[in-house]
Length: 117
Image (cartoon, rainbow, N blue to C red; front, side, top):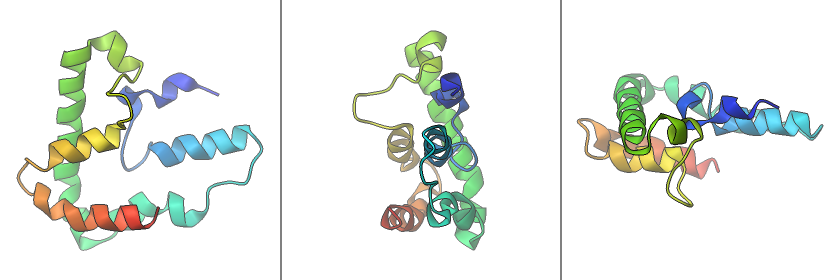
């Protein structure tokens, strides 16, 4: 199980996210895999008109967050995935996104994502 693959530096909201980690961890444990309704959330969002329009804004916000974290933490701590206790990369991203142009448009997508649990 390659832990370094799951550092903050390798995180990608759409393609290499918590679902990727959970799926591989469950496979490592020989457990029941994540259901498709969970693993398809990112691609389902990108298949919507809003998801298509918002992806560039979301991607820029994530990159800005990664850069600011890299500057604050330094390369070694960033590679280890350091963040505020109890706060995920996604939580930090969502907070930072609200101040960007078009950020307000993300609210319906976030509501949908959270409702899927």
